[in-house]
Image 1 (cartoon, protein in one colour):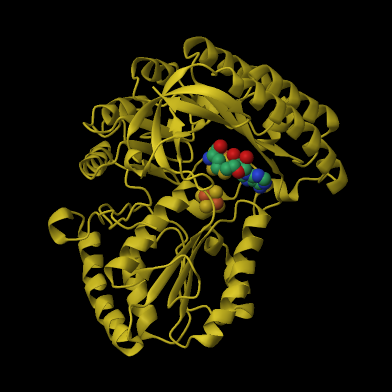
Image 2: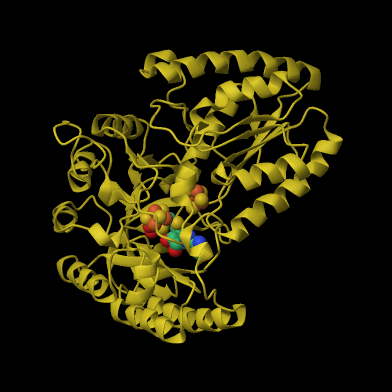
Length: 484
Ligand code: SAH
Ligand code: SF4
Ligand code: F3S
């Protein structure tokens, strides 16, 4: 629950963007509908935001929730509510299936609650086939919109509250960035900050460029302004978000003063008073520069963690994935990072079962996992995404073979991660305390700069502060520690 956190950009004095000001008018209008609903119900109407997918979606949901709270809904985590919105993901088929499953269950609430409205937004809704399916089989949905016009949520909410029809507003692409939208963070002390939207890489398996559009960078000025606002509001850690942060700024013209590189941007963010830790996600291995390594080296505020998606260790599969690096160049990059930044944890994403992948290709991936000694890896089974080039590649790998390769890989990933984790035992590290441990109220949980979780005796008062902790025992993926 996001209780004591301020909603930023909720009044006109804080907002400069003309479109955001326009949306504030719609918030005022929606307030009237919601307040008459409140009178009818004899209590505040409730709203629930359900989020699937990555950090970008999580950040978008913070904007949706801010608007729902501003117009007068009470936040709830249950879908038994007057307004439910699903912010969807479509990166793999199981993400789609989870959305449809939840939506089916939600219809039962709607049968009992005549005031209920159901909305869907996000990546899945950018797909024509999904919209058709919802129009045909989920007639009870009230509002559908995509990723490019999410800034219009207040306006669409008004239309939806006024109407009994299914409202659909989906754009193919956009070159627009709307600044200063209201936002209600999930955590008081940390926040995501979008630095760019979209992706131009077109990895052949990936749907993201089709549903998020082309790369658009925010101006450095707007990013810094947002970080300053967040710092003033108590945020200590920011995570700079983009599908490929290394291409930040490349969409600005050569002579545009906004055209600074991602490492330069990070240095600027590090200068913001009050921001004590800076994370970033995701850098593409094909263009992680020496400049970035240098900047990380000289800025202790930058987290000691690089998430460097490998996808495959086979040069041939990487070529067919359009990743633009090879097994050897990836390993050379990891070597350079380990040499220059020995205290940095490296994590990765791996896909198993890409079309045409052989046992030998997976052996190559396993070899890279061993050599790179990843601190953690997220392993995914390849999921065919209609509309991507790989969906029509020949030699889709039989399920049983994929499963066997996946299990072989997972074992090595887990063994490597366990070995890596243990090496910090006895160290003293600064931990940003995130909350009280759910299983043992005498413990608090926080994260080290390299993202490792640490549990140690403490209390609620510590939440949001940096505490120096001695790492006593490693339990696989987390440490038990003690304050020093
Ligand atoms: N922009 C990031 C990743 C975004 S998607 C990058 O380039 O690394 C997050 C992860 O989902 C990817 O790293 C990839 O491992 C996985 N993924 C993407 N498309 C997939 C697909 N079709 N099947 C299985 N996994 C996929
Ligand atoms: Fe997808 Fe590749 Fe873009 Fe990442 S870089 S979002 S994997 S297309
Ligand atoms: Fe999913 Fe969209 Fe993120 S497809 S992974 S929510 S960019």
